[in-house]
Every structure is written in C-alpha cells, then in structure tokens.
Image (tube, rainbow, N blue to C red; front, side):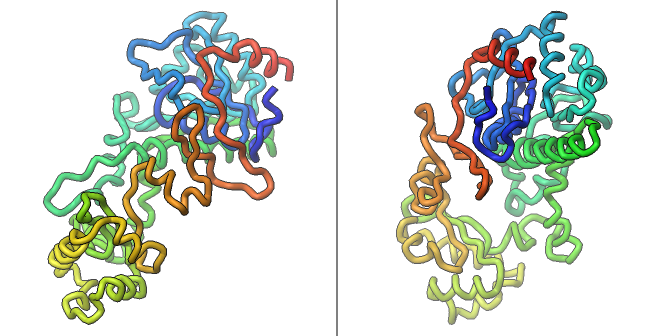
Length: 370
C-alpha cells in the first residue's frame, strides 16, 4: 500500500496515462508531495516513444501498471482504476482518449467525483487544437517568447521550462488540486483543460503590466527586463558567465560602488535606454577582466543582485544549494529534491523509478480493494 507516503498529498490517488513532457512532470510533482500516482504504461514502448527506462526521473515515486489499451480488457482495467481515482492525467491529442473508450464522459460516468486533467499544447478547442507542436511553438504563439533575445537577433530558444513545465505542468497541477477540493466539497468532478498556450500567456502578467505602464516596449532591448546593462549576463575571463539583476536604484547604486563606478558620470545615465548599449559594452569589458570566482568573491551575497551562471552539477555543489538540500544523487543520478517545502507534512526523498508494469498486481489489489 502507498498510504504511508510522506507529504501533504498522502491519500490522493492519481491515474496517469503514460505520455511525454508536461503530463509526466505534473504526475511527478504530485508524487513528490505524497500522492499515490499510478502510470498506465504500454506493454512495450512504441516506435515514436522516448523511453528513458531507469533514467526517467519524471516517473520517480510512481507505480507502473502495463496495459494494452487497444483491447476491451485493457480499457476495462483502466476504468476499474478510474472508479477509485481522485484525478486522472492524460496528454493525448484531442479525441484520442475518446477513441480509446476512456474519454471524460465515460470516466465521469464510472466516477462522478473524478477530476479529469487534459494536458495539451494548443488546448482542447480552437483552430490549432489538432496540430502537432512542441514547447517552443506554444510559447511563441502565446507571446511569452517575444522578449527572449537581443535587438536585431532572433528570439533565443529557451529550455522547455517556460512552456512544458511552467505553462503546462504547473497549471495542470493547480487545476487538478483545485478540482479535487471542489469535488470533495460537492461530490462533483470535472474536466480540466490545461493548455500550454493558456498557461504561458498567463505567466506574462508582469510583462503585460509593465507594458501597460509604459516600461516594456515592443522592441527587444528597450525594456526594463531585456536590455539594460544592470539586468544581463556577462562572460568572465575564464569563459564562465555571471548574472547581474540590479533593477532597483538602490541595488544599482550598490553594484556601481562595488565595481568602483560610483563616480563615473556615464553610469549616472543608467536608466536611459539610449545609453544601455554602450554601458552594456563597458560592463562586458569590465567583467571579462576577472574570473567568475573572483567576481563571486566580490559580489555574491551582496545587494548588488548577483549570481554566477552554474551548470546543474555546479549548482548542486554550491554552498547555498547544499545548505538547503536542493539536489541529491538518487539511483546514481543527480536529481532536484521535491519542492516546495512544508513545515507540518514534509515530503520524503525522491522516490524510486519504476520498471514498466512493475506494480501491476499490487495496484490492482490496492485500488480495487479500496
């Protein structure tokens, strides 16, 4: 039984139809926080599947049941599990689950309290709903990609965190938990349509507010968060990089003082966008004169709003990250530990990564007995 799992979501039962990207990450987040997440895997990986096997960190802490969803018996097995589930996660294109006989209408008929979470890029409706896409496409269409770049250059391709994780997984998790709270109060489940274009657009709220206030421009390199010399990254003498985010005047003053620029009249013009390119060039030349470690010794931990740009392995060894226990090595791999943190119901360490179908017998026994 999984009732002894640590974390605030102990007792929550989540059925996850195996997929890729944001759906599995959402399931991992819920499992990290104590939910009993059961992945419905295929009997074997398909030709187009990205099968990471024992390296599939997004499956940690879950249990796996292997089912052939192309058979009536397989579909009935899943529907039996639906009867005991609080929530379901699926990330198929619109219509696929219906064709399998596992659409929301069928599942909610079996379990009226079920919260049926649908994770897609474009959403369940709209002219692009049935088109293929990936993280980059979704954040591009949503407007979230616009400011990622320098003047005259194409937007940078971000890692799949803004879309898949931020705009997708996190919004699906919030939607599922909100739906479960409603179901426990009213006895009525519902469908959660979590689209990455919706979530990543929603995350631009601060940028939209700055735009309305006249502090974000429709031109890259001319706004508070995408062009100033005091909000940028710089290469050091050793080829490593650092970040500076001295946005507010008091932090900008401290940066200037620590860099010996407090009396330089050119830096008095630091909030005039016309001067940003040359001031950025001056800071680039300055930071290129010392190593990253030397700049850390001068600026880290101060109100200059500074941090080194680290690889994940370097981050795991950083004193601050070590003091907080942000990373650990589990199953021979570097993993980020569960987040956020809870004072009364702390989550445990990252759970084990299951083998495909490893828990078929125990899941059927546990959930159908409940």
